[in-house]
Length: 124
Image (cartoon, rainbow, N blue to C red; front, top):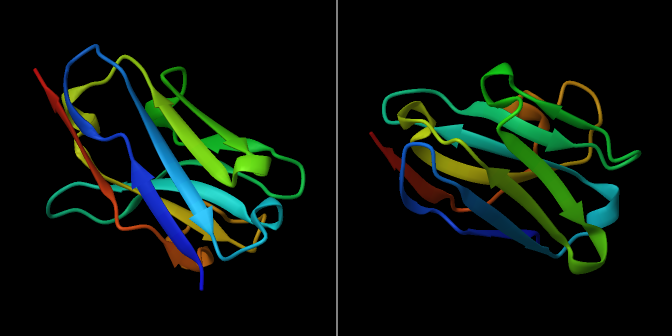
């Protein structure tokens, strides 16, 4: 079975940085689009960044462009999210997800498997 395990979350001051990691198993990693989503208390799950499996193309939600960077290391079955210039509004539980799709990957419904989440808290 597919298993995704996130790590790297924590507490950081505004303007600081964190690097999230997601280790995948039970899938042919190079054939899956990987995405990062986040969910703040009382809010829906929001797309943050994605990397398409077919060409490695990346996409970010507008609010993190220029601050966050998604990358993947296929031989290590891992995907990362480098988060710089963090803001209090970035506070959320961050989830790693895997999808067979390459279109409409900002939609949570396109993703088949999810990690347990890792908490990111940004203080002002």
